[in-house]
Amino acid sequence: MAVKKFLIIFAVMFLLSENVFAMTFSRIVKIGEVGFPAQAPYHGFIVRGENYNSGTPYVEEFNYSDDGTPIKTYTKGTAIFDNLYCIYDFNFDFSAGPIRFGGKDHYILALDGSDKEIFKIENDGGIDLYLVYHNYCVTDLNVLGTCRNGKWINFIDSKKISENYFDGNEGYKKDGGIIYDVPTCRDDTIIIQYRRWHWQGESEPEGEFKFTWNDEAQEFNVEHIIY
Image (tube, rainbow, N blue to C red; front, side):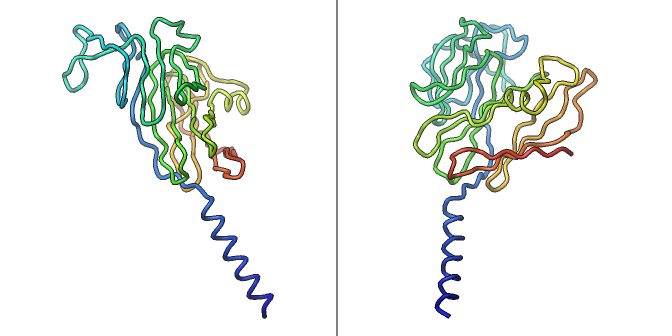
């Protein structure tokens, strides 16, 4: 009887410990944007949704937002979105990474100057986690943030996914190239559907990747599902 009670108590403690260390993603919400929209006649980068921006605004003549206010652009500075830092330089080589993301004085992701949407991935694990997303005939998707020790890591990179699973079959306006949707989340998993870009229009989703958080390893386990 004592052994049976011990086993029951041990099982309950194990389940409780699993619940304590599991991380749940509640939602993915857009918090801002930065970059140069395709074919825009602007003098700098659009920066919106930030809680701090050291750049000097330039009011674009004859260009207005949907709400009727003049569009402002920025050539160089540091912007902060929640706890995500971004340094940008419009005069820097676009292909060499004029927009960079990460923690304060620790920038781990360098991207071209095309417009990027910034999302916060809300969770109960006590870590900062963000999605930086671009999709215009080709996708650039990165999930970056902090692990338990505070170190910044780029956890998910769509370019690496394409290399590992599709032989790098993506490219700007490349017919049949892989593109990725804005992720969704469910419990401890981030889900990214993918489809193909065609000149006639995007295909229906062909599959998805499930990124399930592994708290012990402080990284995501990956599962590929083909529809």
